[in-house]
Image (tube, rainbow, N blue to C red; front, top):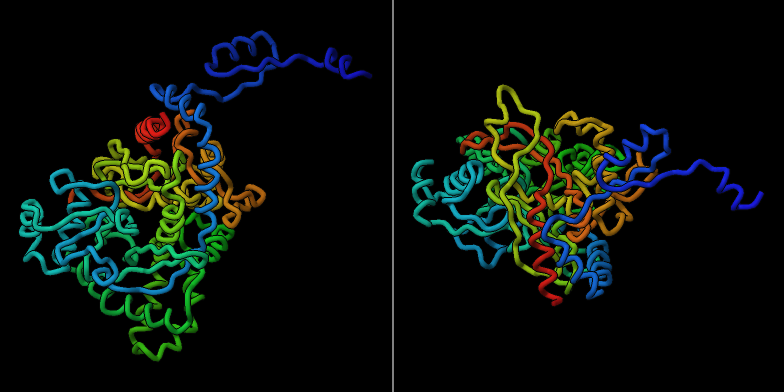
Length: 468
């Protein structure tokens, strides 16, 4: 039978795109319909997309940027004191998550973390004194991302805090993050009670030095290898880090036990602290992501997103091709599950640098690898898979090391393309913790959120201006 005869004998299928009205009408008439999930570009971006397409350099620029991101091999090499590794950090400097923000615009958890850091550093006598001094401008606020660093939730980093030092095993890049305090009433969620400050001082006095001595004894830790293994074990790298924390503890175990440089009781405290803190590795995974995103920055005409971060007031992104410029929109609320008696009325808008994980193919982009995460952030296991599948539409590649068993070991969707975001209308999916909106509250839940489209529209418009 000829191909033409086969075609004539086959029931015709009508392809439709856009509104469902035509497809529904044809289906009711008995026709076979193939629906394409198509939407027009975000309003106001048509001219910018056309200019970038006509210029023709964006595709090659994106290939260069994503190759640089994937070439990075993050390794934990040391734990040091923030004031000693950041040359532009004075005793009054506090780094914070997200785009730039001032005290008068700061969200509740950001204010709470600033107050807590001032108490920890001895810059204020009590919370009221700290708030008054911050309002008078007696501390200098600067985004973590401006210093090669990242911080979860409020992300406040002060001079005395230990920071993890992450180096590129295949290059010369370096990134930093604070050490994770655990969940609940902790500084990063805006809490500043005495037990919060006591924990920070223990981290400075015990956890940081013991980890530094352990790393000097056993050498660098390959973070990419740990993250890749953890994805096979049910982690997503953002809100589920149980497996990767266990793998990390196994990596340092022998050197920690044999650590003559630290007292036995302190080594036991460190082991018990990490063992009881399933989120310990979050900060290190974030710093590993920051190393990759920084490597991808500065490629002319590239629409690759290198930063995605929020401070509880603004949600901001940066593109490789637009350098250090921030494109912001109001931080959105989180669709969350709440702890105890808390409700959405108690919640702050989205906050934290931890969306660097989504920026490099983890977190919400890897939820199909971690179906159990829905018990923490909400949704369904099948919904987690759908969220990951949707992210392939707006990313440049699949990560060769980060693979998802449920998707036949397909690489995670990696490298957000702002042009694809505005062209398809598909928004980056994020899973996140939720901080209380009143300073001092701490953690109130966890949930899901979408990056606001306005950031990407503004970024693509600005990128188009560079080629006109």
